[in-house]
Image (cartoon, rainbow, N blue to C red; front, side):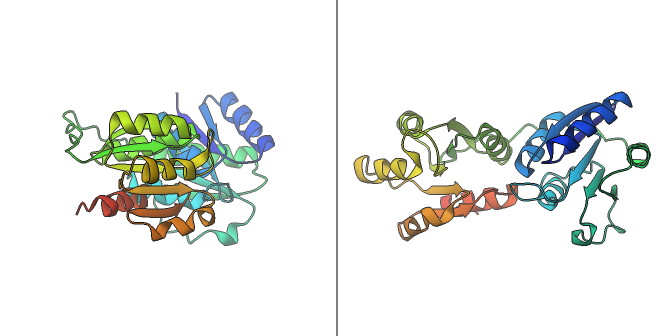
Length: 255
């Protein structure tokens, strides 16, 4: 059964997609923001994505660019948007098209079937190389109360050869830090049990740990002043795989 991932922040349109594609014989999954879409595609591996352009956490172009340039996923994509003028020129892009909102059901289904039929079959490597083994000094603790982000960052960094553990609040972060002894901490700011600032203060002032800290936050202005400290970097969510891995390697001084 062909699989479709529908990405849209309008619940009514998502319901329309679910009903339309299910009745046409497709298996359907949905997401309502950019990070959830990237994470869902890595797990679900849809045969086609219907993608809204203006969605939270980065927009549809972030999803497209991450899948194509960072994850090397050639999945066919249909941009469904009411603002086609915001799209780049799609003529020279493989397996990409655009359909306006509100989408005509027959035209949408026809375009879905056309792109799936034209997409080349994936080439499977019968002997894929094993993932790289984490080396000493490549242990990372990721702390965030958003489980989607935890899973996304864990998958990205594991593939890059790092050993990852996670925590979901400030208390869990400090406890896990003392047990795991990571070489680097990726830390959200707004989370339960005290927040990222409390974790930073506990590590620096009480535990006297100089471990590098990457703040990954939707509100970078709230911790911008902490960048004056040694081995602290503040970046705004969402982080693409390339930016995330690059920042981690810079902080750990890995070439």
